[in-house]
Length: 400
Image (cartoon, rainbow, N blue to C red; front, top):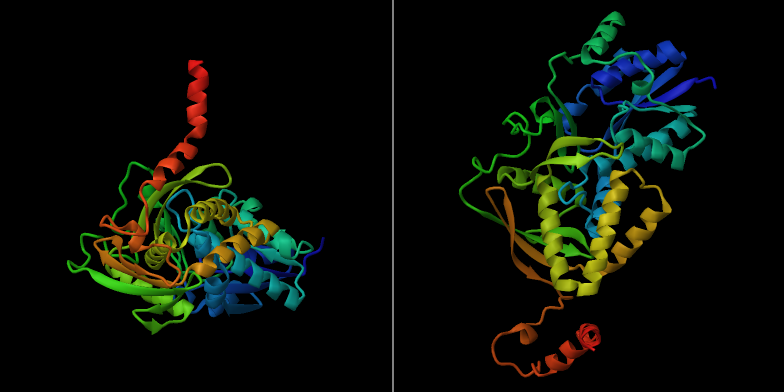
């Protein structure tokens, strides 16, 4: 198949800077750079269009996807309670569906016949991007340079860029691989490739260490309607702004750091350090609201949905019927998640201190240890007898 026009997911980093001239050399095609603004920060986006053109791209499109990321992926995922392997709040994974979809939309609009990404053949992202491409535009060819080209190191890429007279600010001494968006920042490589090494201070970029965090706790009130944050400390707040504010507050108090060894989809284990300050606060608040509102069987089912949904998001299966089904279930349950939660932030910890909801199933009249007239404790005897009936019958059989 002859390739005439390719839309490349472009970041301006070393890899994608090299991909632009490599595509032109090896496919003799026009390269269009696509840059997704998912909240990675102004510094990351500064000068990216000029950089893409100097690399050889015919044009560069910067698309703001922050609101879509929050409204269409982050908030819905929060309702499911999805957490991968007990700790990871899916920061990189959640950004991929909106990036891939926007890239496909641009390719179709411009009449491109191929899509390209800079994911390595070792990671999860190649699966996430290509799974989305397959679901949304299977007719487009996918080019994955890391699975084709001869380069195998940062120095070899730098030599290639020098040969092509492509300017770059990258160097051979880069230690860490990082990915940032509105929800989190991830860190891999360097000293943390050895799981026995403690992360150094230079790993963390957003959050203060708990030791450096303020000695005074800070309280925040979060108000939710149907599982979505609507107010902070009583003031209405838009979705993107809400996460930005929570990130800033949480980072100041050292909230949201994790250091994990995770199972990648491709089969290997990897170590990553993640900072998700605002997300950590939101998850804690929603779990507290669930404890007020969901009955025991509903909460158990939501937990099962959360486990399945976390795996689905991590594995890049966003554009599937299963995602729609699981999300429908979680969204239906979350219709009851309206209320206010107060959290205390102190030295890296998020502690829920107050909770209320118009849909609360908690009744002080029933739960009190004081005298009451609404619960007859003698009723428990019949309940226990029926609840343990199978055990009773089994024991009688064994004695007979």
